[in-house]
Image (tube, rainbow, N blue to C red; front, side, top):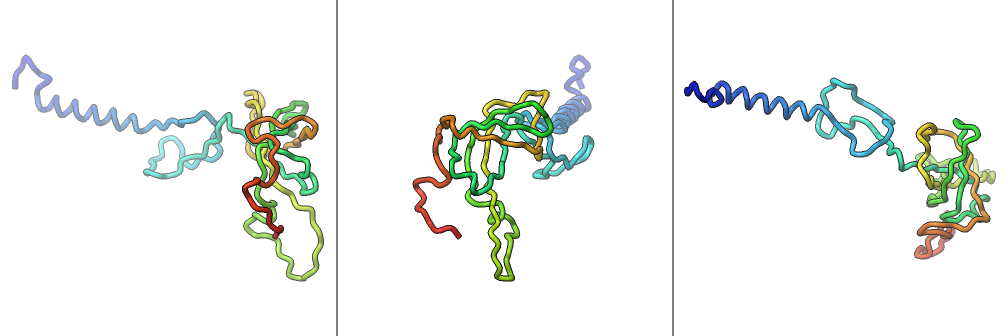
Length: 183
């Protein structure tokens, strides 16, 4: 051991290595989201130990907000991708959000549900089906009126305004898909 070089002493070297490892381990204790957003579901709390691959939480991005509106099948004849939509949210009376029709579901809510309705009696009653229509916001919601998952909205599509955007004017089916009989 050289007294003029105490940093070379084995005990000091070992302590330095342990300090470096402790600092590295400490850096692993802080998890940062790669996106800004709201925590929807959290399955851990500060101080809990976690495993690799364990789901910790679900985060909804701040600026990727959309609405899945269920339109009656007799309302979709004039809907086109890109049409402007005024959105009224029950949670914020008097506020209007703006969006555009972004797309259509390939089937009605009943047809795509886990348990589609069955008619064991053989009697058929015509029920108007609802088709999910995706509406994207054209501007992010203001910070004082965040849109949370599950809020009730009333969308009003402006059928007279020209559609905008890359897929403007497209209908329910793509031209690349051959028409088939409804099932």
